[in-house]
Image (cartoon, rainbow, N blue to C red; front, side, top):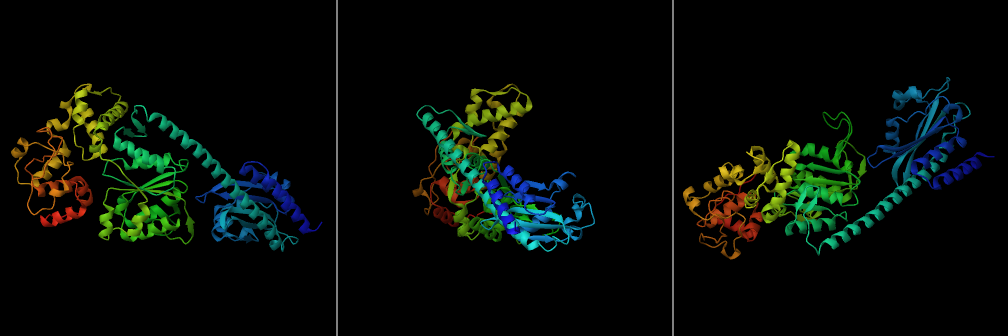
Length: 564
């Protein structure tokens, strides 16, 4: 039988093994065991890489004579990287002279003085490198010149293996999709059944409440979680943007993959680039090894970019390319990596104003603002404050082995507080009050604001004193209203300093910022701007006017906008 007939028979046997109903690792092991029957070899190996480029499956085999001597040698990572990076064959006539095998020569004993040759070819499917196939054998005069013929046969086998790997992964993905499609409608039916009856408190991994504003957000989250659309979470600091990002991931088809998060405001531009894209060894001082970036770590899963509005314009262009093309290069590298990531961005900045001012790229804004979700501040869901307070106290009791409880009057008292820091400030308030409580039952007198020790209230009070000529006694005698009270649009922007109408609140209540009924338009405007961190669009929503009217009023009153 000619050598061509032998290889044809080999392709037939390997095809039967690849199409047999079995797990992928068993299928590849069967193929590796078939190879010695058709190719002269000592050892053979098939290495399959995962999405991060790490070995996922490794199947090896050898002829009976060498298999008796012990375990099969492993392929050095340097060899795998060389074949995968170049995407071409690798032929080494003598392993003893190759730098790639210097650290692993002890695992390749030859048993005689003849050199050992190595042949490796990439495993491809649709022009994508999925792994490698290799053999090694003792090089003698009979086999020394047969590299090209063996490479041709191994390349055909590698192509068949690549298509089988791609098919197995496609079937796995389709199976997971069908499971997800069955899982989501089942949950939807459960929600439909509970809608007509009184709804119990909604609690999803730290998200607690049953206010209409929160229910609307949760409904939106449950809908968009089924897709891969980019989400932009917007809201004030402390509204739980990270919790909602995790909820979107856990309700999505990507929940079995990684959820990776990164705070963009905490890192400089150079460090941020390395964190997101990764870097190669030697790319910069201190880069002692290759490192995968957050995009690679989140491949197949979800990536949360918190404080997206804080990145520099120069880095915005680099990020835009990844979002548009789904590909990147590590810092200091030239290899293009494909990534499949569901992106969730979060910010408390006014991105529209940033785009107008040239601080944020318009094309990046449109790329990330696909599905915006505005998270309600705590003042818009006062009914959830007692539930959140009880949940925080329960956690405090568990961590400290205590049995504290709120008196009904305490819950009623805390429900009237303003909490400009939202849920985060409420949690801190509960912990502080529980720590200093004098008995097992927390009363209104235990709260810091009843003892003039509420730092948040003092912050707003000092800001109010610095922006108004009214004295503290005048404010004490006045009715007090929260900053969040709306101002009719028609009363804003007139030539006179109108005294704007307000909603009265209990007098002398330290839970609200000190704003009296005699405050002028200038005072109300400064208070609103202070509350939202001097973001004009947010202040406009609070005051019930347009951002343009707010900007006009700031210029007319000569108020300098603070920049943080």
